[in-house]
Length: 296
Image 1: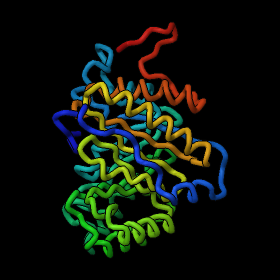
Image 2 (image 1 turned 90 degrees about the vertical axis):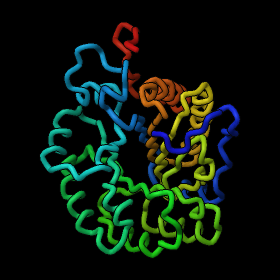
Image 3 (image 1 turned 30 degrees about the vertical axis):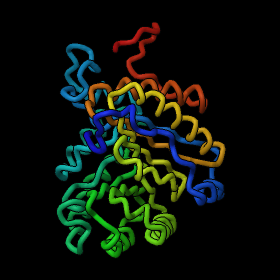
Image 4 (image 1 turned 120 degrees about the vertical axis):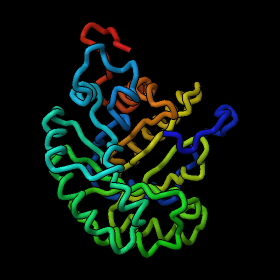
């Protein structure tokens, strides 16, 4: 994932902004005192995650899903997979594993949420629901040139979205956040519709760190820079997530990307160790054997 890549990461101010003033209000609304945490990578294929799989691994998803408790499923951005494929993914993965699939590009990038997207939405959802209880939040990633002038399209899309399925949206055009009027209208729409406002943490796009939660789900797409700063950035995220936990967050969904993806499992493992220690979770430590040795 090369979105927001910079040549000199050490020159970037990676300090997380203060929370939006309304995030606390959202988190303090009534609900459960329990927090559910899912941490994973974006892909499971061996070509991207070199060095992660033991020699001789034949089924990458089978192995991956026994190391992590989720996957941010980017493959579904490129085409609509069949009902049978979703069933196969379901059958290969253990109880408690979740998929967080990206909506197909026909919806977001080609049709750009115009009036012709509904057949694609219907077909996608009809197939994806065969993940059953392993289907996590479905997310929509808009193109960086999808500007607030298309706000009516967003309203229509959100209103038509099947309410029984969790939805999160990532906006990449800076005016969704730096225009106070637009931002306020967007946040109101997402909050009233129970749609999660994705937070993207990438070196070259600090403007996307709006820190405005619109429900009790923190859906975070973290993009490392293959640099030592990746680790200190993750430490700061754990501090923020602990604050949100104390304030009432119910779902933490954190996905680790890298400009060179082969290091994503290492970063994810480091993050899971921090989460377990600071938030008192008991997530499985990837590639950690029963005798305490590690495989990568």
